[in-house]
View (tube, rainbow, N blue to C red):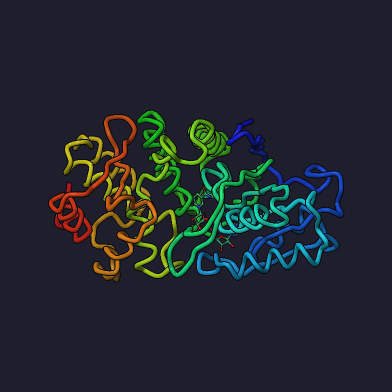
Length: 355
Ligand SMILES: NC(=O)c1ccc[n+]([C@@H]2O[C@H](COP(=O)([O-])OP(=O)(O)OC[C@H]3O[C@@H](n4cnc5c(N)ncnc54)[C@H](O)[C@@H]3O)[C@@H](O)[C@H]2O)c1
């Protein structure tokens, strides 16, 4: 699959096996492999130990400036020049950190990603958003910097813990809601087949990843810098980011927070007369079939901290909070400004506005 994001080309390969370094590039002396402690063995399969490598601590709590600095120092030690290639091998955290480091090292180097989580395959590795968390706020600092090539080697998913597969499913459900009910209707089959312990069969897995990538790639091609249509991809995310911040970054997986946030978006959309009740209930039922926390408030989270985190969300502009809410067959943007609208929001977060 080929895309053009802001004039930069991205090629995406969904394959079974991890690519070898010779398939990725010709000049091995220009490469820095970036991985975390859990994806280092996958990086080994790309290239042996003689290739410069930066191994980071895993997890959202390590998606920090410190990690970016570690990558930049590793690039300097490896004597990478402007024609150097950063190869990020990992999930969304490694992809976002490596992408950001590549975007600023010598004002921009080549970037290749090998996505090793379901979440990175269906979402994070495509579209060029990079960055890190600052002062407990998700993705507060970042850049738009698409990878020139993204590999999605399905075999590596065999070692992915069930919790992480479930996290990826949260983003896949989000895309299916946006792309229309014929995609959404395919997902309960996956839940019935023993997910997250078992992955769907090869054909269905490829279908879901390809469809998610095509949908996101299409949107991002049209609106790279998120001035319009790309905002749809934030469905569930205003709630999700606030939840992740209030709960402490890393304690709830991103996809789990997104799944919970999508249900809150349905409640908000229903309260505003945008989301038809039947569609909201259908979405909730799909999310529930995967065993996500569906009701509010989210256990063990402080509602006041949650509201504070929501207010500081970077999507809040001109005193308004913006949300994406499902509509008849996709989703749309709403902005809340009036006191009564914000009161509805508080009720939703407290669980006082069930569908
Ligand atoms: N840039 C974007 O457009 C975008 C979109 C969505 C999400 N994100 C970001 O992605 C991040 C979440 O990504 P994630 O869910 O992939 O998390 P992650 O990168 O933290 O990976 C989850 C865990 O799985 C481990 N892991 C990765 N691959 C593995 C494998 N094959 N086998 C065993 N363990 C493996 C990792 O070490 C980590 O412990 C968040 O920071 C989120 O903000 C970015």
